[in-house]
Length: 206
Image (cartoon, rainbow, N blue to C red; front, side, top):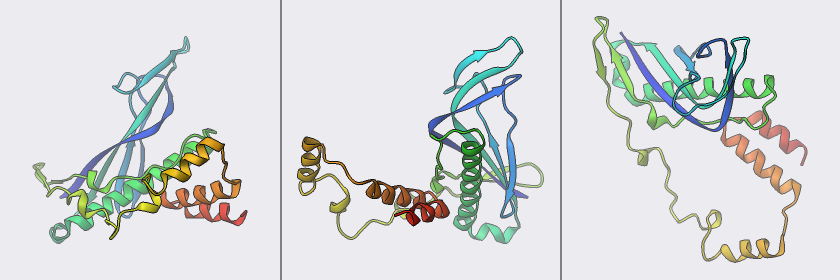
């Protein structure tokens, strides 16, 4: 028997697709024993934006979603740790998506593309028995269990009565942070996306 899952990722940017037909072939990879398939939106799918159709038979369209299908053969005892299995699936999907977006960005010279993380609680697992019967496994824990709520309100990192004055002054006077300040934040952002090497490279220049 095996466990399967599907995750639809909505990207905050468009990807370009071209094909002599309605779709681009999926990309497959196996990570940590989990088979991962990245499926791209067909040219006429909802959420796509057709750009052109060429006399040569090629179609060009834009889309901002990727369907990730996952599968992993399991034994009975693996089902004792559903959340660990969900995390494993989420990690595999996360890494496959990260690799794809980085490769797309570099090889196709698309600087606006960046890493996007998988929401673990969106991974709904389905058990497929050897006879073909399917069984939905327990749903993910509430999002509450995935978030670590701070002991105190995040007053230093939110807009509130204590921070709005400084920000208003910056807006009024056109105050600009230094390039180094922005680079530090860029490095922190990359690190949060799982791009530790790129973050470290940025910090070397500070």
